[in-house]
Structures are given as C-alpha cells and as structure tokens.
Length: 408
Image (cartoon, rainbow, N blue to C red; front, side, top):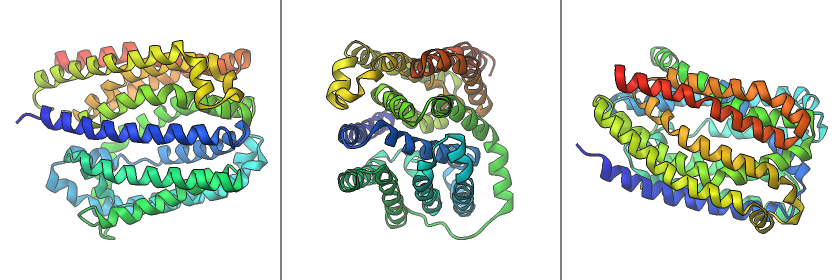
C-alpha cells in the first residue's frame, strides 16, 4: 500500500494549519510587542518555562505508544491514557502552586507570583482533554486536525489580544491559554470519537511507562536543551533580557522549524506504517530530509540577510537590540530543522533510545558552553551556545542512521 498520496495530503493540511498558526502568531506578537514591555514578556516566559519543565518531566509517552499500536489495540489504551492525563494535570497544577515561592526566588522576580497562580490552572484543565485526538495524526486525518487546531489558535489569539488591549498586563497571555484549554476539552468530546471512560488498568500503564521511558528521557533532555538557555538568561540577567531573548528565539525559529515540525508530524505515522521495509523507509527518509533542506535554507537566508527590517516591521524599533542574536538563532533554526528530521524516523521504528542519545549530545554541547558565553556576551552568548549544541548532535545522528540502515 502506498502512503505517498496520504502523506502529501497530510502535508497540505498541516502546512495550511501551520501557516495559519504562524500568521496569527505573528499578528499577536506584532500587536503585543507594542502593548507590553520586554520585562512583561519575561514574566510570562518564566511561567511558560515552569509549565514546560513539569510537563516534560511527567511525560508518559502515551501519544507515541498510541500511534505505534495497531488501531484496535490503541483504542484499548484510551481509558488508561485519560486517567493518567487527569492525574498528571492535577500533579503539575499542585507543583506549580506550591513551588511559587521557590520559583520567584530563583528568578528573583516576585512579580511573577500572580501569573504563576493563573498558569497552574492550565495543566489542570488540559488533563481532561480526550486523548483520542491523537487518532487524527495516527489515521492521517489531518483535515480534521486542521479544523480542530485552527479553531483553538484563533480563539486564543483573539482573546489574548483583546484582553491585552484592555488590561495591558502579561496575565492576559495566560488567560488566553486558559480559555483555549477549556475550549479544547469541550471540542475534544464533541467532535472526537471514541470517548474515554474513567477506567484504570495498571497493566497497560506499566506497558506505557516501560515503552515510553526513552521518550520521557528524550523529552527531558530536549527541554533542557531548548529551555536551558532561557533559564540561564532569566537567572543570570533579568526578566527584560529573557523577554528579548525569547522573542528573538520565536522570530528566528517560527518560519524555519515550523516546516520541519510539520513534515515530521506527517512522516512519523507514515514511517511507522512502512517500518518493516527498511529499504523503503531509507528512501523515504532521504527524500524527506532533502525536501526539508530545500524549504528551510531559503527561509533562513532571507531572515539572516534582512534581520533588521523584519524586526522593525514585526516588532517595532524598541526591539532592534535583538538583531545580532536573531542572526545566530536563524542559523541554529536551519541546523535544527534539518537534523531534527531523524527523530520521527527513530520513533517510528521503536528506537526511542536514539532520540535520547541525540538530544543528550545536544544538551552536553549547550551545557558546556552556555554559562561562560552568557557571562561574556549576554543573550548573544545564549544564542551561540544553542547553535553549538545543535551542531554537536550531528555526528551522533549520523552514527545512529548508519546503524539503522546498515545493520538492522
């Protein structure tokens, strides 16, 4: 059975979704950058870092397992997945609430207390989402994914912008997430089938945790690699510097890595279906990597050479100081997009440990260079450390690919 046609359809729908999401994100950023100060973005950045940290360290890998399983078997895991999701949401919410004094002390930012209190509601609400939404991806029904996700991002953008216009406060960013999360729970039970039931099966949970441990480890290393620079910037410098750096990161990676993320989301279930045929999956991988390269390199060159006018147009003159780090992060985005295409392949053939290895190597490259570079160059040093980390993973990726294609 050929999956090329389904993959192309999926790319079309996901490409349209990502284009819509990025358009709305650019509109939101362009508006909010003129209404809020960099320090206010930094406060929201602290709350986002904490939420992402806890979500990563409590990740079970259930979505990967659901995609890897045959259709009937995957449905048997839904009930357990929902119960685990609810419990995980309660746990994350409680951890945020009770660690607020520690978080504000670590970042030396007592102003972050109110936004952290609000952010603690987000995982609690998200925990009740119907886990069957992953079947959109599993069954290559990306047209359904398009309408589902586009509705959420549109609502979040509208409410965030409206509330920011009214309050001029960083809390409006969290209120947008809360409203969007509530809507996602509601829509997931109106439009997604089957429904989960409050039934817990310890045997299935044990199986998920055993198979998902490498996904969890990779997620932790991935978080530390992609958020470690934010943590160091926020801790060593200040919330304003964190706001500047996170904005540069968003602008540099959105048009580049979005291409790779879109392709990866489509190719993962396709790779999983053709995994037994290693020759076929090898050909597919090289085609995908070549396609990603052809798409992201022109984007990267455009953003690198026209950084100043792009920043001036999107964010305004008050943000021009991010131009140097934006150039470095653009190169990082291109490298990350091209090398990251291997992760979908490794996950599809149940080689989660390879994903863990490449993310760990990236983390080591970042960790060894981050602190001294930030001390010497500020946020520019953080960007350089991120680039060093992404380059460090290249030999590891090459070694893992050789093992997959030559010895398996």
